[in-house]
Image (cartoon, rainbow, N blue to C red; front, side, top):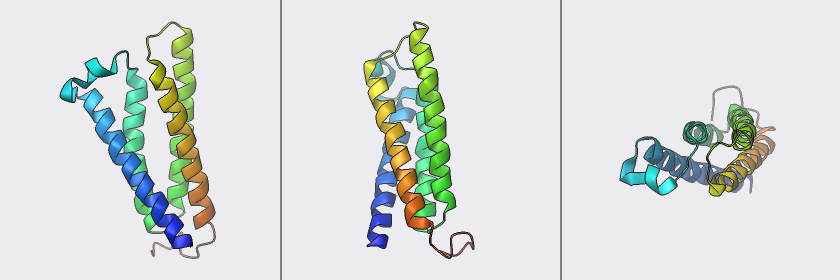
Length: 135
């Protein structure tokens, strides 16, 4: 059962990572006229999400290799997202432009990252090879 749970987390993180990189990259590079479609996007949120997409992919690799550092990497991504979410709230309070969907997306991404971090930590904490470099 544990291996199936690890596979499920890896698949979810890869999907989330690829979608995040594609969506963030599309806005940052204005592919497919995405900036216009997104409306009042907040650049620091987009950059952070884009970076987290790569973190998800690296963490997925680490989890697949049953390395505990991958869970810590997800905790780092969670902390980063939480800080950016707080800054987004300050941005909104200062009258900065934003879209309501940004709040929902950041809520989902922050919560999902925490769940993945906690699940990964729980699944990998008893693995004897976590820090040996073996997989």
